[in-house]
Amino acid sequence: MQKRRRFKQTTTLDERLAAEAARLREEARTLAPGRRREMLLRQARQDETAMHIAAWLQSPGLRPPT
Image 1 (cartoon, rainbow, N blue to C red):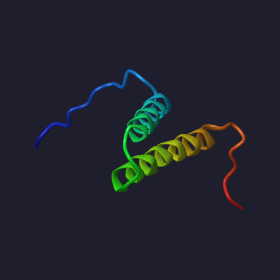
Image 2: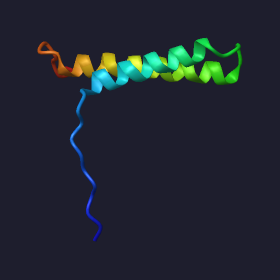
Image 3: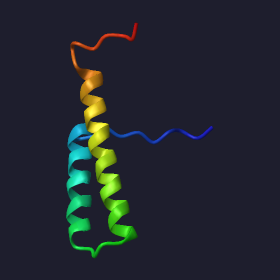
Image 4: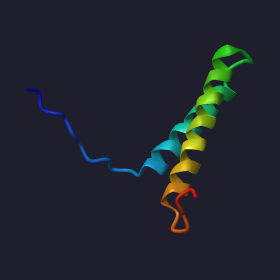
């Protein structure tokens, strides 16, 4: 059986998502309007949404649905 390669992250998930979103938006700024640019902006929005969901899940006021 193969062993899983594991490593400890040096930055938090929020930091990695924020950095990736910023990098994608910066790359999109350099491109002309088109499919590639829209895909980069879409991925940046997905990263930002993931940050909001992670923050919501970690909030102390979170209650289960009733």
